[in-house]
Structure formats: structure tokens, C-alpha cells
Amino acid sequence: MKTNRSISSYLSLRNILLLSLGVSVGFHILFSLSALFGDTLFFSEPKPMPHKQFNFLRVLTFTVFSYVMVLCEFLFNRKMLLLNFRKNYLRLIWIVLGSLVITAAFSLFFTFLPFCLDQDTPWPEFLPRLARNNLVKDFLLTAIVILIVQLLKTMYERNQIAVENETLRAENISTHYQALKSQMDPHFIFNSLNTLQSLIDTDATKAYDYVQELSQVLRATLQNKEVVSLDNELQAVKAYCNLMQIRYGDNLHFDFNIDGNLLHRQVLPLSIQGLVENAIKHNVISGKQPLKVTISTINDGFLKVSNPIQPKIMEEPSNGIGLANLSERYRLKWNREVEILNDGKVFEVTLPLIEKA
Image 1 (spheres, rainbow, N blue to C red):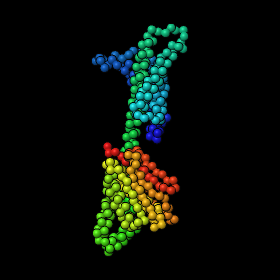
Image 2: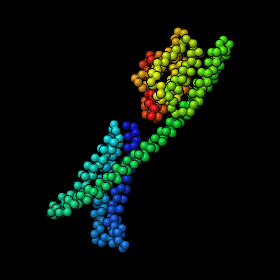
Image 3: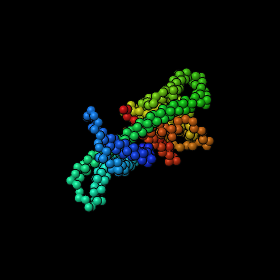
Image 4: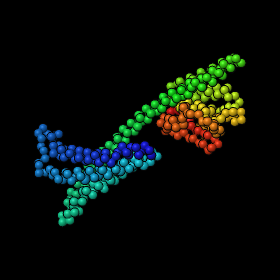
């Protein structure tokens, strides 16, 4: 509905009035010129219509009538753009049928009106032929109106796609920057180095594994991809979870319940990792209040990250991947929604897993 309203605002009342004037006046100028000088297309010498056969007032009257008809057709097309249709071709069918009905009504009304007002004069024999010719002329005007509306709609949608692509590209750059900034935070580096130092003194093998996990986390942060597979994202997430589990020990637990048939599906990079980061950042993690973060696939096409709400007394400022940012990125990339649930006890975020095109 939002997109339809944006398109209809593109066809503002002022633009519709100007378009109606341009179409009706331009069409009748060409029609009159064709009637006056059409013979020059077929003969070497011009044979214009005698001046007495050209009735300026009649042409002006038809132009005004056509302007009213074209204006109504533009308004009808604009109204159709406001309505929701499951399929775009259904909207186009309604536009064509409705425009034809409007055209037939106006054309027949304007054709028979002068003869209805002049009751003293019998209806001429050529009236059916005149009605047919006017219908053909007005249907041509209708085709021009529909073509203009569809052309404007296509141009507007292409511009919107270009703007959204640029917005998504900027959002991705911002996301990678914020994620890198978060991972390179002095506290993160300091804690990682302290943990690494303690492991070197106690368990060299574990220290080596820790370095491998840390490098994988940083590598995932530095990658420049618009989308990644669920499998690749989970590898980076598990590496990050291993780092955090070494830091917090038994006070932090992760539960992965992933359907292997969905590993090929696509997600935005750093989306799941960002949710895990938020869970760790905004909740108490201690021996009395251990934190469990669950990452699971549900309903054959969605992934849910959930954790119990254990709010900190002193809330930390957020400088990572925000939920609003994540939701906007999903909407721009795939026009899909990210579901967020907070009932005061459990915090859940559900991401759609996108089938690879």
C-alpha cells in the first residue's frame, strides 16, 4: 500500500490537470492538421480542406469535451493505483476495462447531446457513423492515457528500485563499519588478549584454537558481501560463541538447533552474529544468572534467536548492529519482515531464510 500511495502522489492533481490538457489539446491539434493537410501525404501538390469546412468552434468544443474525459480517465487510473491487488495484471485489467467504460459513456454522451438539445431537428442518418468515428477517436485517446500512466509508473518504480539499492548499499557499508568498530573495540581486544595470554600459559593447544576462532570472527566482519549462506553465517557465529564461552565459562551457554536442509538458504551477513552480540551485551551473565542463547530454525524457512531477559542495572550503550537497521536491510533487500517479540521474560528475533534465486 505504501508503494501504491507513493506512485499516486507522483500523479498529483496538478500533474493530472496538465497532462490532461496536453493530451487533449495536442491530440486535437494533430487531428485538425491531419484533416486540413492530410492530402499532402499522398499528392505532390497540397490540397487543403476549404476554409469554410474547418469549424474552429466545433474543434474547440470537442477539445473541451475530450479534456473532461481524459481528466476523468487519469483520475480513475490514479484511483486504481491506490487499491491493493494480489497480481499486477489484475490491476491493469481493471484499468483497461474501467477506462473503456468511461470512454464509451463520455463519447456517446457528447455525440448525442447536441441532437438531444435540438429537438426540432430530426436525427440525421449519419449519426451512427458519427458515433462510431467518435468512439474510435476517443478509444485512441484512452490508449494514450493508459500508456502514459503505465510509463510514469514504470519510470517511478525503476527510480525507487535504484534509490533502494543505493540505500541498501549504504546500509551494508554502515553495518560492516559498525560491526568492525564493535569487534575492534578496545574492551573486546583487551579481553581477547587477556584470555589468549592466560591460555598460552595454561593450554597452548587451546590458545591456538582461540586464535583460529578469533581470526574467523574478524574475517567474517571484514567480508564485503551483500548476502551469505546460512552455513557460512553460522560458522562465523559459532566462532564468536566459542570466544564468548571461553570468556564467560559455564555462565554462558549456546544451543544450536539447525535443520541441515536449510543451510543453503541466504541471510544478511552479520545478522545472526549481531543478535547474539546484543543478547550478551544487554543481559546479566553470572554464576547466579547464567545466560542461555538459543539459535534454531523453525517453520521450514525461519531462524529464531532467543534468550531470557536478564537486564543489567547499568545498561551499556549500543554501538553494534541495531534491530531497526537489520529490519530495514531485510525490507530493502527482499521485502521481508523481521519479527521481534519481547514479552518481558523472553526476547526473540525471527529472521526469514531466503531461498536462493
